[in-house]
Amino acid sequence: MVLDNKKKTTKKVVKKVTPKITTKTTAKTTAKTTDKTTAKITKKISSKSKLSKASPKKATPPEISKKIALTKTPIAKHSIQPLFILIGVLLLGIVLDAIYGWQFYNSKKLLGFVIVLLGIAGIVKSALQFKEGNTPLNTEKPTERLIKNGLYRYSRNPNYLSFFVIGLGMALVLNNFWILILEVPSFFFFNRQIIPKEEKSLLLLFGKDYQQYCAKVRRWF
Image 1 (tube, rainbow, N blue to C red):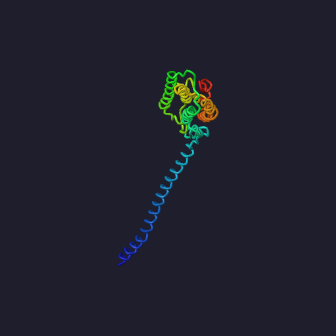
Image 2: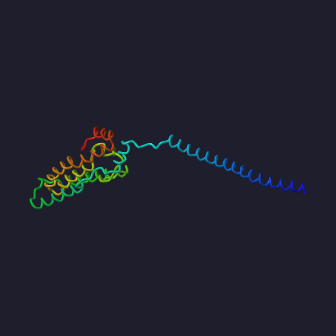
Image 3: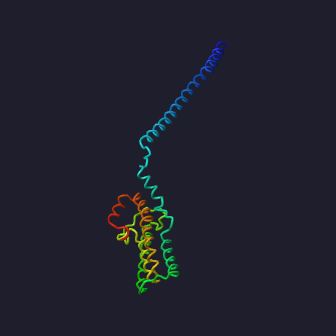
């Protein structure tokens, strides 16, 4: 009976002690795991913060951002398109000739045809150069490249010069002095209004490169 009582008491003591041990061990293990996970997270955060400090985002300089903005803006927006001026001069000259009949002495039609063909060839050649350089011929569209080869080695505006050559040729072909007279004010309009607008934008866009080009090549010829 005494032995049975002893066995019972030892069983009770074991039962009381074992949950305490297990709770202590589980608490220790959970504490260790949480410590490890928190340590890993803090390491990751610190490494990310170091990387962000080490490699900051480079801000684009104002000069570069200005140049990017300029490449997206059109060169010049004209109130009247240059081609329409040429057409207007020719049509108005024909109308004035029909009303007043002011003509050349000894009209040279063949010479006129040759001059017209030269003017057309100049426009076609300059247009092809723009296409090769992936540059729009229309000044209302943005450009990224300065054309300096071909006809642009001799004139900064060979396309506009060709307009006036065509006008001169048509005046001879039609024996129409009015066309030649009307070309004078249109030339001054191009020289004072249209071309300076374009040159101002090109100078802002290309800077020294365009300045050097202007120093070498004349505006007209």
